[in-house]
Amino acid sequence: MSDPSSSAPEVRAAARAARSALERVTNRRGRVGVLGSLNADLTVTTRTLPGPGETVVGDPLVVRPGGKSANQAVACALAGADTLMVGAVGDDAHGEMLRESLTRAGVDISGVRSAQVATGTAVITVDHRGENTIVVSAGANGTLGADDVHDAADALRAVSVLGLCLEVSDPALLAAQRLVNSAGGTTVLNVSPLREVSAELVADAQVLIVNEHELAAVVGSDPGREPADIAAALDGHGIGRAVVTLGAQGSVAVEAGLVVSVPAFPVQAIDTTGAGDAFMGTLMAAIAAEVPLGEGAALASAFAAVAVTRRGAQASYPGQPELQEFLA
Ligand code: ATP
Image 1 (tube, helix red, strand yellow):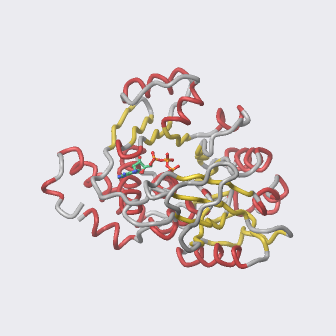
Image 2 (tube, helix red, strand yellow; image 1 turned 30 degrees about the horizontal axis):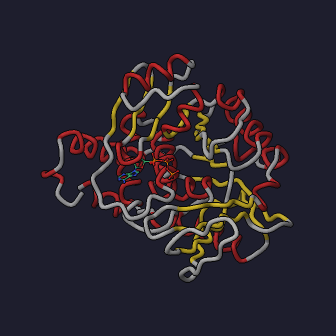
């Protein structure tokens, strides 16, 4: 957004809301905990994706830090929040890369333990049009259970916001959600990647973050993109606080009966990998600073807009100075 004066009025209003949210995140410190997955993203670009039984030649392998929860923790810390990561990695080079990436962003990794299996891995192929295939091997993420929540209980009780997504098992997610809910914190659930999930986990999350496909799965039908229809669908399922992300169409935030439509910032997107995680991490930083959901979504929209202009997930996320410059 190099020239805000040339932007649409709703984009200028979102930039104002985002600046105000960023100021509050900077000045008010509630701790955010993120419990979940850490993956090494192994990416090969090819001219065409291979079909079954087919071999194709690819460009050099690129290894980057990823995993939905680790991405969210990095975004949250870079947006300015005091952030704790709870998860597991293998005792290997990928685990070391992930620890380093989190630490560089300022995330407290005292809750990341070593497992006796390999670090979680996402094997990604991308063709020249940006179409991709992804195979995730859970590795150490698959060892995360209710025991880990027990071990990290004191640290988790102290967070004001807890972020969860579906790349680790339900027992771990449920244990963490119950603990933080009963300690008075705010639990935020990203219903992604979409899979069968415990109804309790969805019902007891205080804030839901979903894209349009995840929303359709949660409410049982596709309400489309009209903010009023999205709000009605959420209300019909007793969901009072949620943000629905709509890719380059922006997002819709619903809180206390208020429906706020937040635009995406106009940028030249080159890689949207991890855009949803960038959004969720930043939104949690805003929630921890008690910023209203609509304003928090504006800040998250700005953060994700910068991220999509670069390759990778964590590697594409901006720090506060760059975010301030983007919004200036
Ligand atoms: P993913 O699973 O690919 O990480 P997602 O489906 O969870 O993504 P999206 O709705 O695609 O999430 O994107 C999240 C937010 O990122 C959007 O609400 C928007 O604010 C921002 N965003 C995504 N794509 C673009 C884009 N092309 N230009 C600007 N902002 C974007």
